[in-house]
Image (cartoon, rainbow, N blue to C red; front, side, top):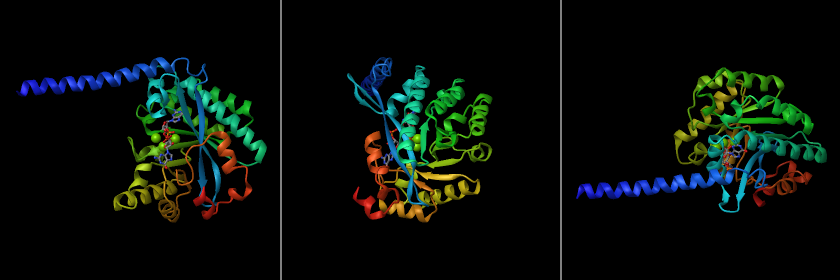
Length: 291
Ligand code: C2E
Ligand code: MG
Ligand code: MG
Ligand code: MG
């Protein structure tokens, strides 16, 4: 009896694994050539400066639409792109496209906007990253301080000399560095102290619980306080309600990003909503609530 059960659950387990493996294989196969076929696009999510109540800039987020697979989330395909060695090519494309977009926006609106771009560990470790960043900035005619690179704590697990020297080189080139998803991974306070991050992005998971869990609220307070103590600016991610936004503002969060202000939008939509109209640049709560 128990043996039969065991076998049954084993079969179930292996079928589930098989499915995952099949999905992964499909992603792998379709990802090759996706860039050349023009299947990627970028959406932009506004980052709002809470002190000045104005648009600070945007985070560039990649989207993939494939004929066979439909819309695939970056949470699913970015890890595969890392594994099969496509991430540098894809990540470089994201950086170029988003900075060319920024160039257009700066030209049209003359604003000092920030473009925040995610860079995966393997792309960051690739020795081509420095020359690539410099070339793209030059081609786009963008000041290096308008580019922010987001990395996650996973990058520092290996903490190779290579990573450290790239961090230093980007810093001295004037590029801003943000630590993304802070509090979810292998957080170590020593990273914060030893690495020259400009920005700490506090993960959505703390925001979700801030009105129901005192410890989540205290985590946010503490993280903001540590960040400020180390002269870092905080961006709180995944803010969905006015209640959360109000409290975060009171707690001294420097910037807020989340569905409360806007979902990630196409370049055109983002421009119409956040750049084209002067009235909207200076944020008025009543306007935002109606968006
Ligand atoms: P991330 O960098 O932490 O980006 C934030 C994610 O949270 C985005 O998901 C965004 O759409 C989502 N989000 C923002 N505000 C809210 C909110 O209020 N509520 C909820 N529920 N979600 C919110 P997305 O676009 O699916 O990206 C997922 C992850 O994929 C990103 O997390 C990032 O790690 C990775 N990714 C996206 N684009 C790129 C890219 O161009 N390069 C690399 N290397 N990774 C990328
Ligand atoms: Mg990010
Ligand atoms: Mg994040
Ligand atoms: Mg994330």
